[in-house]
Length: 188
Length: 300
Image 1 (tube, rainbow over the protein chains, first blue to last red):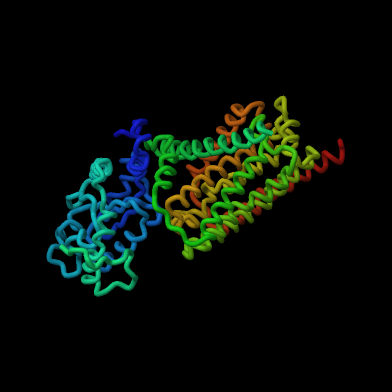
Image 2 (image 1 turned 120 degrees about the vertical axis):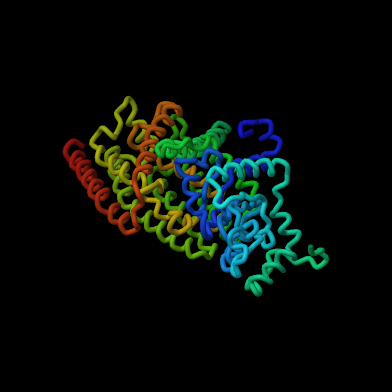
């Protein structure tokens, strides 16, 4: 941890302050709500690292999606993600957002979350231990340090791809596009 | 003239530094009470840095101006409050100006938040204004008692009259001082009176639509108001201070007392808060005022 490195603070204070002041909005869709309270309270005390929960997406810069994502909650996740201010980071917690997990053949569950919003990091496991959130946070610090946590830039550049996927699974969205859709963008 | 300007700048900088230090201390003490290690003491500073680097959302010109109005009111208020020997605008105003400008803080937030068009903001603003209605009544009675006892409206003269340890907390003004301590959590908006910014009920109330640098200004304003409400208590009842260091030491004691109250109490509902604020503090404040009037009538 280089929180006390004054030289680095003077050189790149924006990046450093984003690292050590992660305000989290939790999206506890199904499971995962049990793992969050020990992390933010006395047992594992995430506030040591500047990680605190906030009540509104407008103030958050880390989006933690725990547990499976059904089609209905995907809509709320997209809206929450689009309301967060840049720069914003996303972490998927548990196996279900990665590849569907135990809901791999469910008709009503999203299998790959990163088709719909960009995800900067994954925590695998069903469910991961609460300590895994700290590992994710330290990995996220490394990514921010190396300018690799660029999900929000990717979302802006590849918006056509994400929007098309969202509209496909939700049968059309009832809000206008967040960014202007670039027609020349190559879809993957 | 130059010294005057320097004094004004110094007062604002002292208030800002001490306010942000208090915010950090607040989180650290809370963590220690809850058997946690807690964040570093400079964590609020890091948060404010981060918020200035974030891309904030604005909701129109009034949204921006309201928060600036609130911040400006806090900065003006600091100039009227003597900080130890440092008193920037001593000749003018006095306690009446302080009482008037104190209302600008919730009004600025209300003006700004109203533009955000979020139902949580409306609920938060109505709760915040009701709360200030609740504590303004006993506060006015307390200030009237103090002004009657010292026969002046100038806060500098009140501080000077209390030199040589003749603190008004241990004078006939004892009841008024006690009442100020009773309404101090409401002025500071800490528990049990954090009904306006309840994160679990109404998603942190008026602050729900603030992000980026607007939220940073909101936090700075909060730091200022933390400083102001404690400084008024120290000036009126604990005799100010011979120098700023002594003054800040007294503030620290009062602040830690407030944090302890915050740590152990749950939150009032709105009507419970008003029932409390308009009953016991008002009764005690009226009793204190009557004592002062009797003493003044008898001994002059």
